[in-house]
Amino acid sequence: MAEVAAVNAVAPVHQVLAALQDPVRLEMVRRLRNAGAPVKCQLLYDGINKSTATHHFKILREAGLIERLCADGQTHQRLRDADVDAALPGLLDAVVGGANRAADASA
Image (cartoon, rainbow, N blue to C red; front, side):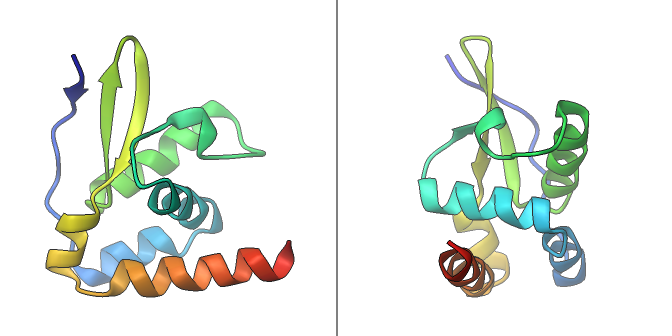
C-alpha cells in the first residue's frame, strides 16, 4: 500500500519559478513529466549525492510541484501536474517543453 506524504498547496508563481530555475530541479521535473507516473528518487538525478537530491526534492515539494510516495520500502516522487496546471495554467507545458527542446538539442 502506497503512503503519500502531506502535500503543500501549489505556491505562488514566484516561488514555483524559483524552484524551477535550478538546472538540477528542472531536470527532475522534466523527467517526472516525461515519465507520466511516479518515479524512484534515484532515477531523477545524475551527478549529485543523495543528500543534495533530498534538498532539491524538499524545495520542489515546498513549491507544491511534487509529492513523495512510499511503497514497499521505496520512495518515489510524483509530479502534481493537475494541481499545478489548475493553479498556474500552461506553466509546466512551457517550462518542460523548453527543457525538452534544450535536452534534444544537446543530445
